Figure 1 (tube, rainbow, N blue to C red):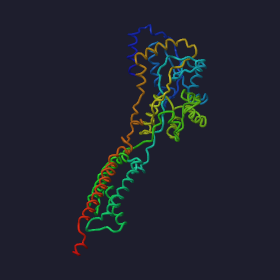
Figure 2 (figure 1 turned 135 degrees about the vertical axis):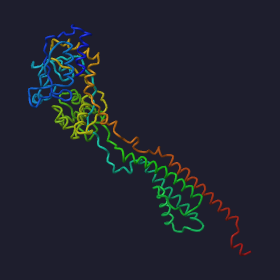
Figure 3 (figure 1 turned 180 degrees about the horizontal axis):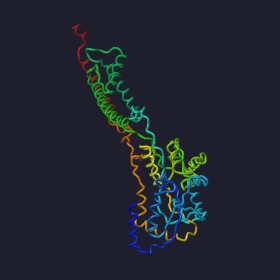
Figure 4 (figure 1 turned 45 degrees about the vertical axis):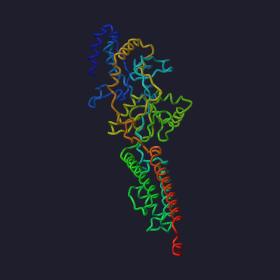
Length: 452
């Protein structure tokens, strides 16, 4: 990398030759092909020509310049991984067999491992996350009813029925007007139903009455219809034009409750051990799933992981940094977001380099790692391999700002029809009956006029 040379000269100026405590030492570093974490690139024309790249290569290049040692890589082949059951087991076997001095794959120290190997200072501490297939988009067959919650639809039917009843009763009691009396009950109901429905769907309609009491209820219904139509149309557009994804799996509980995804993890990894050793709760449910499906404990990366994740059956538990690399690799390979990653889980993993037991140069390596941490070089190397995956994150997917309108959102509209419309109509209707009664009482009857 371009900063390696600059760093080397900076170290010579600041620390001086005293820092080169391992001059003349040669270290053998066990590595495994896991792009982009570590890549072993062979020349097709010449198999003996090998090039290495990745985090381990950059980190030990800096350490070698600082401490003065030389190094070479010892490849752990896929056959070794399959024979030992996991990548970590195969790497550790190289240390125990004296074939390598350092495990170049970042590993977590455990009480069991401390019995037969040592570890450097922590290189990084990262939280776990769940890597999963990109959630499906909800089908849009139900889009016409999605804008409103079920309670809103119920209230629309109630308001529609109440309006029809009020209009029909008042029209039947008073007649449509003086010139066109309505005598057939079915005709009254059919006219009011058709008028109410036409207004609701914004088509307008002829109403055969000019009674003031009817105008209140009809006018209120028109106002309610305007509110409902505009609210419905605006929300319907968002449901039709913007994709709405199924929920992202963000925690252990979500994954345990998910009926479409099984948990998967790398065999022998810390995440797999946490899940398999849990005795209660969601983690036990996930552990039971791994015991029922032992094939979900993956032996090697990346080919096996790519296959199982893109099949849509499983979600993979690993540190978030690794998850981001997996998601980016999938995005580059397929040209679209096939995978996404959930939020950080409440479990973290310490990453260090494992070394052979009683490794004589452990303190010198620790000094170099501590210097790299303090100077920010470890962070800088890590960022070199970080890739933008914002478009594949569930939180960044295009979604409607509000999925459904609730009854609280439209309470004002229903208040208009039930409060202003119905109550005022009843009041005006009663006033009309009172006026009619008074006029009839004070006016002489036609029979009395003829007699006189």
